[in-house]
Length: 466
Image 1 (cartoon, rainbow, N blue to C red):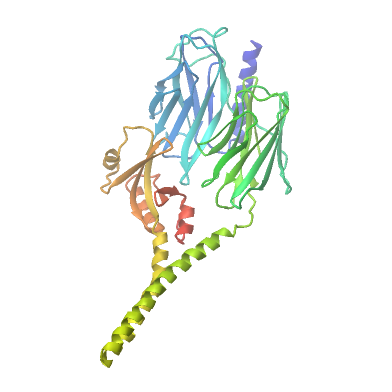
Image 2: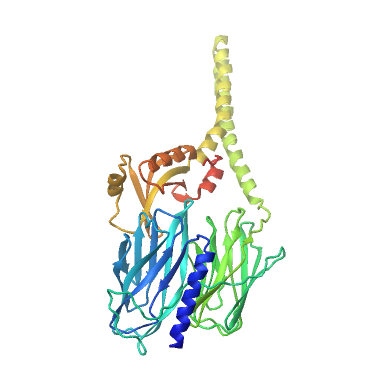
């Protein structure tokens, strides 16, 4: 009874906190039963606060082996479930600032023990994919489980509140390393991030020391992966390292016993002014806790000297080849001149001039060719539903031009148009939006490889236009 009262008070406090302090950012939380009896079905919920965002979005839940998800109230989304993952996909999310997706958890008779359930919400903002994650929650399957709950009615038993709690962080100073601390019941966590120069000017070594106090069980450290960058592991300290969904992750099923964890990775990419953002999250008494590091500016190191040398050699090779051609032409004409009347002198004099013009034009031709690998197109959608095709999108949006598609990151992406100039693609994007594709945006390629529009503009020496 006391436990239920505590959960109720905590939920009410969080409700009023959200009323007064909500800043309109996108968030996700869940209502799950604390216990599920094997061989039964229960109703659960995921609550998405989407703020003002609109357009394409995907909600995803990951359940343990022996548990499946059935559709209940999908709020107009296309639902699918396979390999332990349930997905809800919207081409246009509900208009409500906050909406609730209801579903049914089906537990096999064989499942038992404490299991974790995770969820995340993906959407597009300013032409970039954004992901908001719900910290994993623990649900007990087996002895001590609650009676069967009617799957057609919402569960009334106590739920695990997955709303992140508020942390206190120290003010950032100009000196490194950056320290983030926070006080939670029964735990004190400190995270220290140190950034140092990597093997090249395009590499940064990111080192993190986590003082975890008495934390046990599941824990995770994650950094946002900057667009256009890659990351590879260095020190993992017993964790599972991965790079996915725009995040660098170190995940522990059971954190090591030592009080301090040290992890590191190498960040690689072309420098741009940006901040590193990260957080450490864990479970404590079935409550999700997390500590965010304060954003830290990525330092800039000296540009390597190898790049200009390589470019100089490339430029030098083209005129040399053409110079040889020019040199050969007058020699042949000189022999002819000796054997022919003086009247041919004009012809001989004009030939080198023509060849000289050809040599002057060659470097310009090569420069144009190097930029011709960069192209721009307009992306009109990305879907995981195999039923979505180019012909269906053409019918929905009345598009008569060819629609191309490609697979990337589990999505089928659909594009129209191909331009050498960003301005032309930008104008075509506006035309496509006029047909109802509100989330259309410009994408860029360097040959067959997709790159950011910013990279493409630098390579092709073009200006960005709003």
